[in-house]
Amino acid sequence: MSASGATAEPPPDGFVDLAGRLADAAGTMARHYYRSSLNVDAKADASPVTIADREAEAAMRAIIETEAPGHGIYGEEHGRTRLDAEWVWVLDPIDGTKAFVIGRPLFGTLIALLRNGVPVVGVIDCPALGERWVGAFGRATTFNGETVRTRACPKPENAWISTTTTDPFSADEAAGYARLRDSVRVTTYGGDCHSYALVASGTLDLVLDVGTQPYDYCALPPVIEGAGGRVSDWRGDPLGLDSDGTILAAGDPALHTSALKL
Image (cartoon, rainbow, N blue to C red):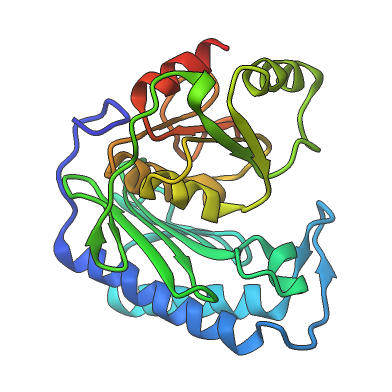
């Protein structure tokens, strides 16, 4: 069984390798534009986007269309195609565009492969740092090729937690977050996808966010759960294309349960 509760099988090795090649292509493009003079456009939701976002995703999509032409694609910058396919790639070429624009190295590329709606491959690649986490159902998560594990932290009072920003929280979400924040040892902010990767590596205990899209979160379950953690929305439901945009990721499943209650 997969972490989502749906029956799943380990993805073919070739698809995991393909995810790595997609990350290589996106990372090459991101590094080309990183800390250069960029025009920053505003999308319909006022979030920033640059030529680096668009070209990095275009590079990944071109590879998929060549090597896996029957697969679906759900990308942040260039739309959706064949979402009814058995295999669907979900792409965020630069997660943390604000960090990218100002030269902060914590941005990353998020790549997920879903089989029948269930995330079975995930990559968190931070090209400015030379750091890559790869998770796949049925495999242990790796960081730069070496196996990593989350750390034991069952009680909130011992936990170090992070959230990207509290700006999008509704009143109810803010109240729930405050209960959790007041119960933990240390709270930090920022980090985008890099914070979730640190949960997999066992240096951070819990990360939560709201207002996210599938390209923000579909890569997370294979990476974090392959390292021993747990990821869901704030109701405890598995993440998929139709999730509500809330994320709760914990290195220790017992901490995840306690955080949900709070």
